[in-house]
Figure: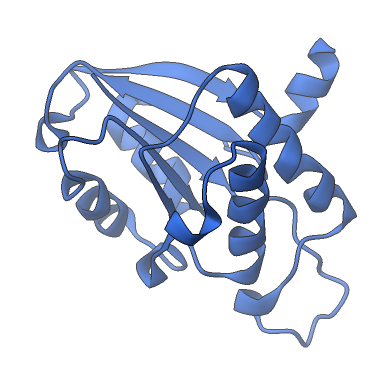
Length: 166
């Protein structure tokens, strides 16, 4: 089985409209929600073998906050420039090139690219909100074998949903 967790960065701060999009930090809610999602992974005993993230400031901060909750060494997060302004092929190529010894990967990025690949891989057609987590599982032994026929939804979680469960 292969599992991929798509994670959308936490809520960003738009107070400085002159700031370049890449450099936007997390806002107050984002700083609170990113660790909440990290706690979700910890509570569900979900740990990545490989953790990829966009290098945009808000994505980087989100990935580090999640990694901290999981005691995952933040130095092992692989910041990939192509995840910042990714298209479908960029993300798919990243997945297909993961070494098959790794069974669980995290990909932290941006919309609309996460929504697009989720739709293509399993037909998931809901918006992934900020700090949202979408887990997919594929009944195969190699990343190059993932497809709609062997994929299924594992989870779709986001802060407002988790807070309502408490």
